[in-house]
Amino acid sequence: MSLTLHVDAERWRAHQDEVLARHPDLVPVAKGVNGYGLGIATLMEAASKLAASGVEITAVGTAAEAEQAKDHYSGRLLVLTPYLVGEDVRDLPDRVIRTVASVEALEALTGRRAVVDLKTSMRRFGLEKSEIPNLAAALESDQTRVEGFSVHMPLDRITGGHDYVREASDWVEALTAAGIPVPTLFVSHLSPAEISTLAKRHPGTTVRPRIGTELWLGDRGALQARGTIHSVQKVSKGDRFGYRQHKARKDGYLLTVSGGTAHGVGMENPKNFGRGPSGLVNRAKFIRRTALALLNRTMSPFSWQGRTLWFAEPPHMQVSVLFVPADVTPPKLGDELPAEVSPVMTHVDRVVFD
Image 1 (tube, helix red, strand yellow):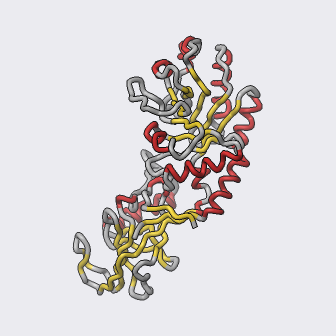
Image 2 (tube, rainbow, N blue to C red; image 1 turned 45 degrees about the vertical axis):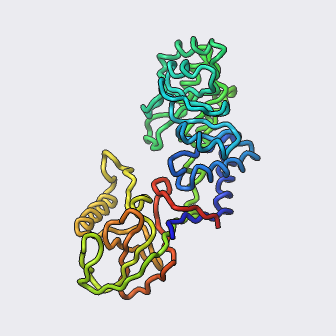
Image 3 (cartoon, helix red, strand yellow; image 1 turned 90 degrees about the horizontal axis):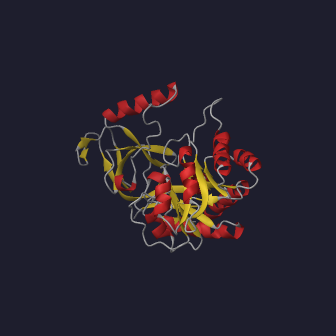
């Protein structure tokens, strides 16, 4: 009995082919502890199948993920998190490329493959333009093995504001002006049209988009999480149940289903962190959810017969307890309930390709 991610294999792979058609120089990104909900090994096997179409490099988030991935993928692996000076370099094969965000980190990785990350309006990490002279000096060493440069752009666009293609182009121009060739520029969050414009401005540079979410999760209809029913118990209004011994508000059924806090069920992605929900409708929904939660009324991600079910009480570690009204025929032991969850925040027990 488990929380299972069912994948429509044919539809899922067809979507990857569509993304590859739009981005022929694609670099798949397979990262995260749960590998976008599908697992690192699964994504590496999928990336290997894209090799026939010219995909010969795949990105992972960390060096630890590269250690997991190397046994499931024979191509080059690009580690996206920059190496910090003094960090354990790990015993990784030569085909693993490390990202660096400073000249000092590049020099500390002498003899190893590297991609130099360039600071953008994301203001996260990366080389500053003021460091270009030092970079040029470091690249004179025969032991330096820089395989390209990278820029990471914001997801949201400011209407009538910043030109992200111009920002990336400025970096290429600044580097080439200093005598540093840019044969490959890895980019994140640029559209096909923006990539085409950038490539036309710099015909000597191959622009390679790193894509994860769109590639693996872009067709959400190909993926469905389902929890297995462990028990179905009839309750009458006033019956006490659960850890907190709440009273049933009315007659119905308590369902115990696979999927709890250990799986990420009941967790919420803080998309609007720092500024609250935007728009009157979203704010009204947020206020309503908050008020209901104070009354121990929280909607679950599970549904039955097209009807979203309420949590009977907060989810447990491995399972959730749901309430079904008496006028609805409940599921049977062993049935699976669909769950609308975020794959990147969910740790399923197994992935099944249907």
